[in-house]
Amino acid sequence: MTGTKNSHKSWVLVLTIGLGTLLNPLNSSMISVALTRMQQEFELTFADASWLISVFYLASAAGQPVMGKLSDMFGPKRMFLAGLITVAAASMLAPFSPNFPFLLGCRALQAIGSSTLFPSGMSIVRTSITKGQAKALATLSIFASTSAAFGPSIGGLLIDSWDWPSIFIVNFPFIIVSFLMAIFILPDKRQGKFELARIDFVGITLFIIAVIGLILFLLSLDTQVHWWAFIVFIITSVSFYYYEKRQTEPFIDVIGLKKNKNVTLVYLQFITINLVYYCYFFGFPTFLQQVKHYSPGNTGLIMLALAGFGVIVSPFVGRLIDRHGPKPALITGSVILFSGTALLLTLHETSSLLWLLIIMAVLGMSNGFSNISMQTALYEHVKPEDTGSASGLFQTSRYLGSILSSSLLGLAFNRHLDIQHLHNVAMICLVFCLLVFFLSIRLPGQKKLKDMNE
Image (cartoon, rainbow, N blue to C red; front, side, top):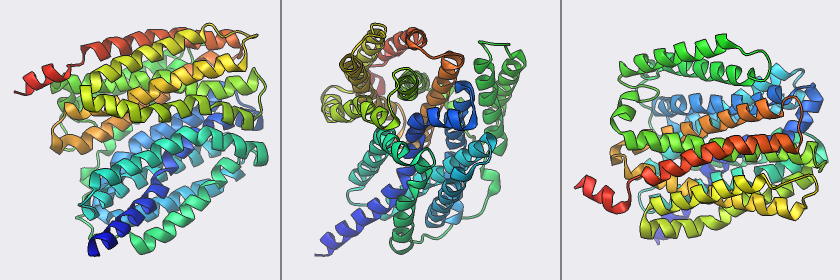
């Protein structure tokens, strides 16, 4: 009887955390359908609007490790509640943005608040659920992946009815329910010692400056090239590397990456996969609205072909990995990604919606193969005690790929958007698809990995 009671309590706790942790992936994906309306509202170029994507992922990349350590210091429950309050504040202010910089600030604040929820939620699960912990973590992963996948569809339907501010207002039901449940359900763990020195503020600052420098350089390539931005990127990147080498608790463990080349190449592969996939995830909604003239609501429904098929194939991919390891799934995913990108070059002005849906379904399936197999490949090459930091860097890799995709789209879609510009993006992505394929082939298979471990 006690076991059943504890089981019920565990799943209520997982539900509470899940309602909070879905806010980051949901808000990162809903923006894809809102970009066109925000461009019109604030009179922006696509390159300007792409900062709404980049600033969210950049703040998330910098925020998650900091918030994880603050969670250890102040207690995960307090930080979880603080994160929900921060997201609520950002979501309340964003619809009243008087200008674009203010809206960017709201997006950054929203990212920082929602980045607090995942590490504090994970900490609570690991310390409060002993029996069925893996199942609980898998359930939280489903919350995140499902909210990210269906974000464009939810956002499209909301924008059709209540315009772009609705993608911020929709957060409140999740925030309110999660907040009220968190007060009564989440355990109030004793806080640790306050050690601000544990947070690598200098490393994080150098990382942010380097990424911003790279974005500014990439976005300037079609006009007057900002070489100064490239120089800033190089100087801060080199400084970041040498600074991180000397830290006991670095933002990114560059020494560990240098020693474990397989892990480094897994991160590189994941960055590249996300660069390609998010070019379509953020590019298709803009193309559908500005070139094909679909409404945001219809665009959101069409995007289900891209997002939905990734979810559909995931169980099959999981079984394939259980039997043969991640390498066959990774190679299959890379071939499907290349095929979908190549098929995109056959899309023309007269092509039917059905043909576009087929192409999107193929690209969506590639994401279903890549996500699970990449994560499994990572954990095969890291020690169990390094799982937490490896997972953090895995998320950072996803964010970097997304940031680079928004920069590529900003460069390609800035002046004019038509089918040719979509083809230009596809041709660039084909090169990256080949890189993904070669990285998949070079990954050690199950037998070779076993021999290496022995």
